[in-house]
Length: 220
Length: 188
Image (cartoon, rainbow over the protein chains, first blue to last red):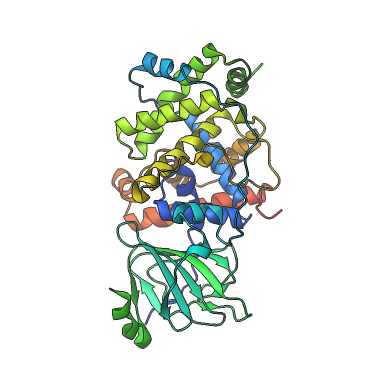
């Protein structure tokens, strides 16, 4: 059976550092940008790392620019864009943080969910090299099937909350499960369904009787 | 005496107010090659890196008035524009999304509710880094500033990959704790 170890750190600090450095894949980049929108807890840390990265840029190594004069001339030929009052488009109220909306190219209202399990709906955004990227809609009090991962799985809570072997996660929280964690997230049973954005860097490998039964249906 | 930081901020202000070409050239010559190098460290090929660098410089020329010296240094502002632009382009390839969304250029991401002076962030990060054990600090430098992957760091240092991974993970967690002890905490 799998071991359940509460790690010293989930690794979120390192992932945020990679976010700051611009090293995350597009889905994870969107996930952490959305985390920062929803939750204040890591904003100072991110700002501080950005300040350090900016300072390092000032004294950083150089890679010469070719055709410097032509490039400058091209820029000077452009007019300045006068600062204009930002036009705020009336947005349809939508639960999705802006960063996720931009990544998906649509809001929550325009998503066609597919039933994945009883009480669980899924919207698959992409599969492949960038990982498996999905939105999950888990009915209040419902369980996800037990599963482990071939790689890590990073999950952002957008609405509601869930609990796994590591702890409880509410709106804006990020759960990071590596391949050692055999977890079984359970959505809070408080009447509010849980909506999550999940990025798994390898296909989920379902475990347990229910999982084995379900798995063939996940691969199509 | 004015610091470099003030000098760069003054140059940006001069571009914003007077379309000052000399000021712009100095910024271009200082930051252009450095942004280009940063993008290439991220694996962007040289042609694309120069293209993105040029876009960042165009943004600096056309939108200099959006820079706020109280919120960030010029280096940090340009760093973020370059980073976000690169990510946007990667995203566009994938989804063939042709909308010209400039929101990545303007910093709309939420900052801390209580913004600290840009210089203070830098000072605090630096002092937090000095409190890391040497073995962790050197790995943080390689990972964060030099942009090496875990396996590149393992090759370079001769440490086992697992050790590299766990030390880096702990080092960043510790950095955050030190920042919090210094009064930079996320929960306001």
